[in-house]
Amino acid sequence: MKGGFSAPGDYIYFKSQVPLHKIPIGTKQWRYYDFGPKVVPPLICIPGTAGTADVYYKQIMALSMKGYRVISIDIPRVWNSQDWVQSFEKFLDVIDVHHIHLYGTSLGGFLALLFAQHRPRRVKSLVLSNAFLETKYFAAAMPWAPVVNWTPSFLLKRYVLTGIPSGPHEPFIADSVDFVVAQVETLSREDLASRLTLTSDAALVGPLMLSDSLITIVDTNDKCAIPQQLKDEVSERFPGARRAYIKSGGDFPFLSRPDEVNLHLKLHLRRVGVEAREDLVPGIPKAGDDGGSGSGAGGFSEPKDDREDAPNEESNPESPSNNEGQPPLDTQNNDSHNPDNQPLLLEAIFEKKEVVLATCAWHFMLQFFVIYYQLPVSLLILYINNKRHPHIRLFV
Amino acid sequence: MPSRRRTLLKVIILGDSGVGKTSLMNQYVNKKFSNQYKATIGADFLTKEVEFEDRLFTLQIWDTAGQERFQSLGVAFYRGADCCVLVYDVNVQKSFDDLNNWREEFLIQASPSDPENFPFVVLGNKVDVDGGNSRVVSEKKARAWCASKGNIPYFETSAKEGINVEEAFQVIAKNALKSGEEEEIYLPDTIDVGSTSQQRASGCDC
Ligand SMILES: Nc1nc2c(ncn2[C@@H]2O[C@H](COP(=O)(O)OP(=O)(O)OP(=O)(O)O)[C@@H](O)[C@H]2O)c(=O)[nH]1
Ligand SMILES: [Mg+2]
Image (cartoon, rainbow over all chains, first blue to last red; front, side, top):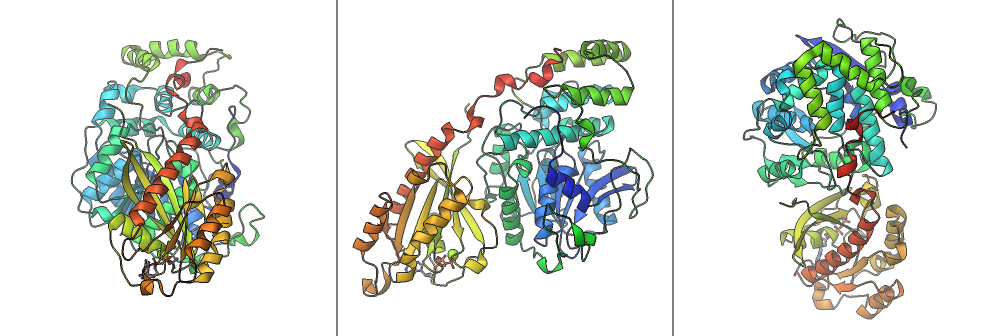
């Protein structure tokens, strides 16, 4: 199942039904989905380093159909934990949401915990997958953090991608990895640099006011990029949390085991007293067919007007820009012919740098960038190329 | 230091409404019993750490709604089950007659790889009621049914008095473990991916 990635059908359907929002708040650009009845306190999903708001599309589809409101965000360009807490708070104010339930995975789990610590009155409950409590392990695995800001995009991508365990996976896990890899391709250099900075910036989660009984830990019981030790620290910190383990699913159970994750999310929301409003779900066309009556927005969000657009500075809140453009994963990569993921990387670089190089450009390009960025980056390249990731694979 | 990741064993409890599924789980996990009846809605689970042959396991026990109209959560919880517990009330004939349906329903929904040998355990609950005088299903009949379905282990229990609950769950855990381990052999993710995970990092060899 290697080769060019093509977007799964249910994702294409999702993109056709659920509008993407892009709004600037202060200096940050926010990119998010918000779907489901507005009267229900939302579950807000925060992805990991390699994720985007899109990685939760299966949760958005399934839970909104059950009458829950789901918001999923891209981690904005924040550079430290304080920046995160303040920016996220502003975001909530702007979208006019007060009490929230957070579902955070990997880095997103860490960010959810930080926010719960610093804004205890807003966070009513937490669901965590593959989360961690402090960054020092990642900082240690990334000695080149100081030069992250001068590091070209392709190297950052490469670094992030090496953190995603590849190798033989069962098909659903393999598909989830493919999906996330394709999402990484849509991230800009600044996105990646800020996330890596966030992950390596010294920070740890202090005591929470939230009772353990309002926390559910949905961890997968198989191999995953977050070291077991870090996951154990989370379990130990919240001994009274619900442990909703899933036997397998890898790093992205929300993509590879959506039924089970959705079940746990529903159980969690029910336990913490969120009432779904199935009565407000507009007549849903059955997934997969015409989508006919879909004009679809009873108590739901606005109709689908906005789509992904090119990095585009200005767009007003509430009426996001309408640039034509394609969902990041769609067919554009389908012409790739190579058997592994390299073509994705190369294509992205070609586009970005407008360097036209013949087929086997990799080493050539390394040299190009070594000259271009001189010492720090050449060291970094050496580091990335040589490291066999002895202990800690990166986040995800 | 080896990781503390523990084998997860997943157990599903099925049976008619009111037979005592929730009560049995609560008695086993929390050592508590309540006379009040509150129908389970959808499904819910409890976890318990169990030690077995010097190893620690996480038992994830799924309690489901006996009443059909409460089965709102879909069937995702069936996935990856290692053992299925079928419960009936020894004082209610229908709950015994329905065991067959529950068993078949389980096999359809969970579609285990080897349905013939999938471990079930049957519990005849509420043996304490009325000193056994209102009992309508005899132990003999129950054992005969279990024997006919491939020698399903059978226990007569009382969630109220805590009779046989611990014993039953030990067998449940043991059988879950057996099926869980067999299944693991076929899981592709037990292949060590450590050495192959660098493919992406090794550049273009074109
Ligand atoms: N005397 C006696 N009563 C029991 C026993 N087990 C359960 N009960 C009572 O039977 C009633 C139903 O028990 P539950 O455990 O809620 O039944 P359930 O199978 O979970 O029912 P649903 O959730 O509707 O599927 C409750 O009032 C319990 O107190 C038992 O062993 N002995
Ligand atoms: Mg019950």
